Length: 279
Image (cartoon, rainbow, N blue to C red; front, side, top):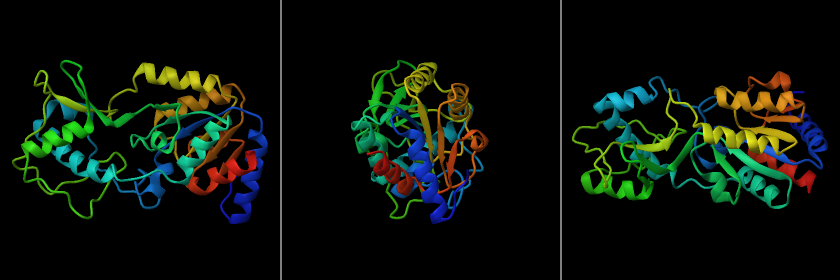
């Protein structure tokens, strides 16, 4: 079932709520749930094309690429950190508190589910809040690394209008003279605690996501086109168990053919509407 007009959308929401009633619901969320918080999605209307995304291989092996990443990452993180949860995030937190939602598996690194009040959140692609030392394993708060960056590079400034990307990165005009932060324990190479292109989702995170899904008896995919394999693998596990699958995404997804209901609308509208019908 596909919905696009307000009438069709309302009918689809009612059908979804009927299927979800009395069930423990797991959520799988993607960048689309955060667009109403001012963070653009990777795909669909308004998305910015990333023709040269940072891969883990380039990050580890190319000093210039790593310097460019930290300049852009710092400028973007400052703008990224100002974004707040929207009605979609809040609805999920409230549905967890009322017992309808068992937890959230998110592909996002923005931390907005936790800031909205959700307590059971599995961040399968990591988080912008932490930075890791690849040599000694020390973990740092991103805010502390930001202080180090600005002490090392006092000339750095935050543009008023940052062209933000979904991972908190921006495209800096220049990286000349930028000093990359290092581990304050061992002087080793630092890396944000996020999964880069070319990296695998850590097994412990994926197992935690699978465990959450097994403890649930319905799945809502919200704001994800399911292009990333980790998301598709989780949807396949739900499909094998024949539990209700609801997909809320403005654009078509790879799993639409498996869904019991698809709702082609924004998550900030649909998730609060589902919440109202369930409660």
